[in-house]
Image 1 (spheres, rainbow, N blue to C red):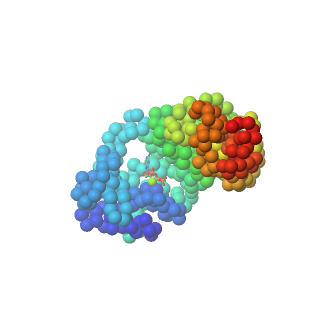
Image 2: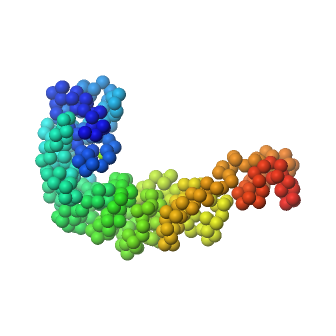
Length: 397
Ligand code: ATP
Ligand code: MG
């Protein structure tokens, strides 16, 4: 068993000693069977949240109404969720009621896909009532039960299906794909924040081109923010080497291909965090600059290493140039800048005020920028004496 499971075995044992059942479930068991790296283990139990809290001295209520208690131990922090069923779903997203149950099989039945409905006990024995292992073997994404019903219950599952295609290089079982084509409008009922989480996982996955193609072919794209009517534009992206891009770089490419004029509004519609929006906006500003930013030491300095490299990669994609080479050469260019931070400059605003005897004003900043540019372009050395002489020669002081 993986180290993360072994470390958590004592947790399962404690729950069992108290007279309840406990299993590893969900993504970690799936990834373990697939031989993929595991990030965190989820535990499901027959004990109710209150019973779980009585077993462990240190817990936190993170989602107690859904049955989840956070158990904090020396070996780590674990989400322990009571076996439950869900019913209702009148709004296509959240169950009207969550019912705690004592049977593992019932709990596994409420899960989205057969590959995510596999449990493992403390000795490594697999419990797989919905034949998830067979689907794993066949690289197939199959809903637990009728796909139409399961997608109607929670439309987000359709986006999850596609993000698993992207992460795992699986395909959709035929009925599941057909149902995706029919149930797109249900996505309208889902909170954009939840869609965004799955979509960004899709964009980050190794098989993003395959998953994006399914997004277009199933028609689901029409129900994503800003994507309606953009099939032809989005399709073009699939012919680019977008696997070499980070998620933010890919957002920039998507916006360019969709001819989005108001970048901020488009990304806000996706509920992206403001910090991410700013970062994508900066990539686009650099890419669209009339005078190539990569020809200017000052522009690259101002952009900073990360933004400059991101913009260089996006530009390379758009101009059908080698992305990795663009990344390498921009990294080199940044590394060879004679300065990395304004504070590295050998003179400060104070120096200028002493030398020039003018009242403080916007000129200080302007002069500093002139000096910065001269130093970056190796016109002068970054040295107080030389800078002063240069200012003198230029009749600036
Ligand atoms: P990851 O490795 O990315 O975390 P995951 O499969 O663990 O993938 P989570 O969102 O962490 O995904 O969910 C944990 C488990 O909860 C899933 O494996 C699945 O069994 C169940 N699950 C999550 N979301 C849904 C959903 N919308 N409908 C039904 N079951 C779900
Ligand atoms: Mg998970």
